[in-house]
Length: 249
Image (cartoon, rainbow, N blue to C red; front, side):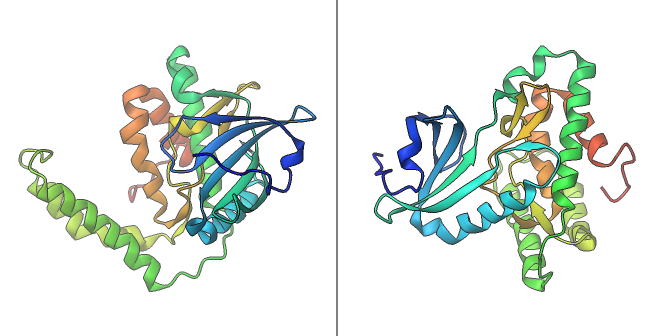
């Protein structure tokens, strides 16, 4: 889609605007180079998501105080004659960890997993202004039930003799509420981690951030991390729990 960018506050400072096609987000993303050769990330969303994007921007801004590399929140506003909302962020130099993780030896992969786990722990344990009401807890349980029902009703993906597992989930799902809800990244996996030029991990794409059960951020470990790097996946869990994995997990 062709957008009108001229109503973006810093548009006059943009030297080049290059569309990015990577990732699964519905946001359209652009790599911006400014007149002073600063690299920025511009995200464009439908104006219907304005309030959601304001929350996302505030979440990113709060996380900018933590000790890991991530895009810094610069500004947010409306553009394209009010049809869209834009978010301007700093750019993280480096390569997708998904593309380079297998180029490292297993010990390095494990250490990178530890670093990623510690980063996620720091995200989950910020002091957020969350009203821990029943609505949030109801949504968490509803989400689990919906996913379980989708599985049960789809014979193409059912695993043989799965009834014991289904019963376990039904009997134990409320245990997930023993820990207070928190803000989660929502899409934390190798594809949204950057291996930076100073050999550290940077985190991108917070557009699925929400208040939920913190262990929901581990779902993508099985789906995306394990097939690519088991050492990273193991380090990710060890790092999150500081090498002492509790029984409730």
